[in-house]
Length: 235
Image (tube, rainbow, N blue to C red; front, side):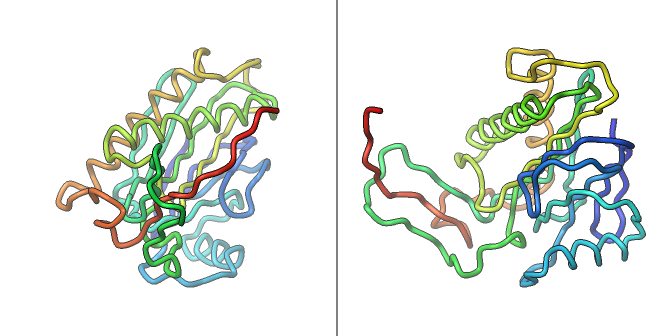
């Protein structure tokens, strides 16, 4: 589905006339011929992210603008999976886990080295697309299905639901066969769940082939545990 290429730490996923929905930097809906996943160096401190993304894309000789995600994971650990009309490509790292205890014990939020939080330390980035045409609502549903699958897989594989910098892009072909829905009970949603699950697992296996997955937020160099309580109400 995507024509993929990696140069100088930049992964381009090219597909003509594609509609994208990104939860990453400068995200939202867009129409473009490509999307990107860009590996940033350790100690990354740039805040002019639009300029930085353009610089990296240009340096890698990719001339198609499009939505971009940033990650601290080396792109040699990128993995993809496809089924039917759906494909997903993932980079997965959990050096900055975000834990969510169901029964929090403290009243304050615990953050490990929050001043250093940023895309250079981990991140699970997911790009998932279908060759079907989806309206804006169904494309948002596809994004949410991908996030749900990522969360379920990370919980099973690492014990964490995500990291502090995860981001997802969902894509569709506006000129493809129309599909009304993309939820988990549809062929598109079911395929997306399986593709994201398998790609996350494959990327984790690659990145952690020679190093351990953090066993807790305290064991990780960066991360956050949300311990705060809220006031529930009956609407």
